Structures are given as structure tokens and as C-alpha cells.
Length: 203
Image (cartoon, rainbow, N blue to C red; front, side):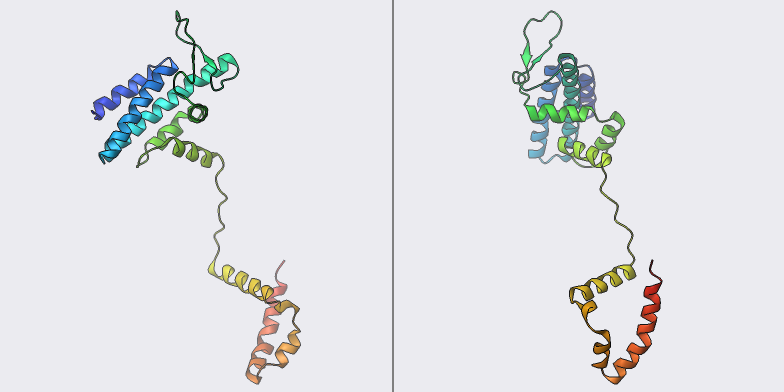
């Protein structure tokens, strides 16, 4: 199958010229077949181009489905879709081989701003329907940014949690110090006032 730049440009143009759902869906299906063929042949570049075309066709199909939805009020599996003027036959989503999940995903992609879609398609690797939707959802609701912890902050937090877990705060500090060796007691007499002074700066 030809998957060169000329073929790619021609298919992009053909997608833009689609005015009926089944026209865009037909291009989508052909691009999907090319994608599978290229994957089996381990032709990464051809697979990437075919996936790009497939997604563009899915976006166009979603745009046309969305337009039909607005015209009819509610687009459901098996709902009637308008056809070209002069045509009396009314096709359903099922007639065109589109299921409810595809209709939902393609309309979601069609609602993504064009600049954002193009940015996703320009990224390296094989694009996917789910990948584009997921990238948009992450952009809309980005995960919380983790604070830039210092090693010292993590260390003191960990030590305090460890002391709490070992119920050290419930122990008699005077009794603990009394049970220490002379050298340990000298260190504690020196360190505890420093610790007390440091803790008092909190809050």
C-alpha cells in the first residue's frame, strides 16, 4: 500500500472535504487497515502516518456526528442521522458500523481545540485515540505538583514519624536519660536544650 507523503496529503484533503458521516468513517476504516498492515510489516513510519490519518478521520466523523446530534437533539446508538439532500434513505450509527463507545470518543476528540490536537499528533511515536483523549484530560485536570522537598525536610519528617510509630513521645524522657551511659547523658544534656530551642521556633 502507498503510504508516502503524497498519499498522506491526499487523504488529509479528502477528510477535510467529507460532508457525510459515512464518508469520513470509510476513510477511517481504510486508514485503520493500512495501520494494521504497516504494524505487521514493522514499518513504523507508515504505521505512524496511517494512525495519524485514522485519528483525523475519527475527529471529522466526531464533528459530523456532533452536528447531527445538535440537529436532532440526542444522538444514541441506532439514532437516525440526516443524509445528503435528495436522499430518502436514513442511516443509523449501526448501519455505518459505529458503536456507542466510538461515537462518544470521536465526539470528545472533535471537541478538543485544533491546535491541541495538532500538537498531540506532532509528537513522536504512534498516536492513538485513547492517547489524545487522555492527553487532553490531563491538560484540563493536571495532577497535583509534588513539593520540592529537601533531603533535610524528608529526613526530619521520617525521624519524627518513626518516633511516633515507636511511641517515643509517650516515654518518660528523664527516665530514658537516666538509663543512659555517662557519655550519652552528657550528649543529651547538651543536645536537648538545643532541640527545645529549635522546636520552639516552629509556628
